[in-house]
View 1 (cartoon, rainbow, N blue to C red):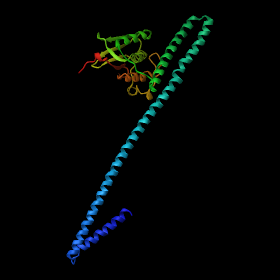
View 2 (view 1 turned 90 degrees about the horizontal axis):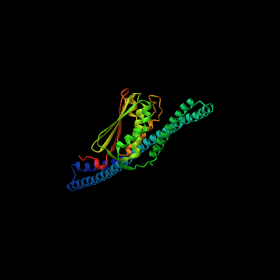
View 3 (view 1 turned 135 degrees about the vertical axis):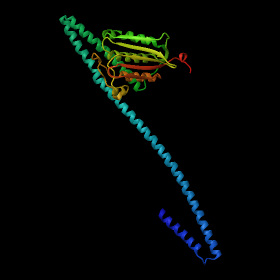
Length: 322
């Protein structure tokens, strides 16, 4: 029996009670009986309404719970889709680097080795020196690329461990400048380190922070013109040390600036002397800094150079309580 049939029967029953009550010739006993029937009908009706309300509440709770479950599932699906997009971009970037950026220096090494053998037999030492320098550059580029790839792969698979220790930030600044001093000298670029007399003791993974600083300084050298300056500035806030690497290079367009640390949108830009890169270094810097509870950001505009910043937590003994 459907609801329309139930409604019809109840309506007929109510009309029958009304007819009895409207009958002028109705005796007192009959009228009392009609009122009794009427009261009984409404009492039964109230019980049915109460039952409907109870069922409705239960249904509403079940619907609400089902909606919450559906929203959670949709949220998980959205998160999984985002992860799939990132993983796919990571995979594409990885194969792009292997296919292009790693293949080129390998081909250069093979060609240089062949030419060195030829010039050695012909005793053409000046030409040999030129190709030896080319081999040196290709080897350094390949080693740097392989190191970044290895660290990046470890970070993506969760196998990269953070080993925090206390060390002086000034020490790695000086070490990094010493490592890249020859590159700066070859491009006639002056590196100026501006550090306060106070030693900034931080707590982080020393190797990771060294890699970050080396990548940022290498990029600054790559995009700086001859005869320019690069400034490395270190200062402290209440809880962190902040490192700035500022160059006087070509700057970064606004559109590219927004995607600078996103693996799915990275692209390699040749340096002022056509130096090669992978676009992977900044992604690695972001991974390393975030794993050490710091932040990394950039300020730049075309023709006005770039200023990269990253923060590292100070050791507890050096933090200033508010």
